[in-house]
Image (cartoon, rainbow, N blue to C red):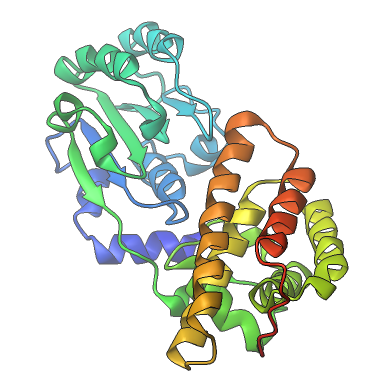
Length: 304
């Protein structure tokens, strides 16, 4: 499925093909785009074509390819220090050597300054790829020495092709809209998880305290499927999309709108804090939901 995403980006920005053909003079290239646009897959594909062995690059066993991969943790000074010796050795199998620093927004200022020396005096055979969610997080001195390409959102039609066919058409469009042109966490959206998320979002919008037991059961089932904070992130996005539709149809009152927006903000904060402080997802999630219902003792019945 990722081949379609790579093809989309190459067609949207034909200049990327010039990287493969080595017609671009810059030796340092930033690929910018929000989470879920396929930055890593695109760079692995470009690297595989440059080094004439995508399979080895993808499996991270190519002697002329170095991947520094960071998901949540910060990239450390030691990670950059380890590059120097590797760079000094000439290519083994190819004409080029490639360094790919994934999620470069996780580099602090000290690490970025260490990288500057390499950016200022790269060997002729070296190509450096940086993937980043927001290029402005990088230091101006780093940005000025790189060529930046910004990826565009994926069209809904492409996401619809990629997303599971098991998803009921009644809420597939809601899921696609909540993904907002990205594939983030897309493997999670199978038929069962998708229906549970949609059902849970409905109960939270209705905000009837009598449904609290059902809500907690749904939370437990979803957490059993994936004990990760992105579950809360996706729930927040789905509630936002559904809330917009209720507002457009004028089927929800202003007081309820304010409560739901507060819930969305709290869910977003919780998703960040769970990763940051390693909180227990189930307990934190259930506590937030309980507080949401108890803020206003009145049951709120809203037709969904």
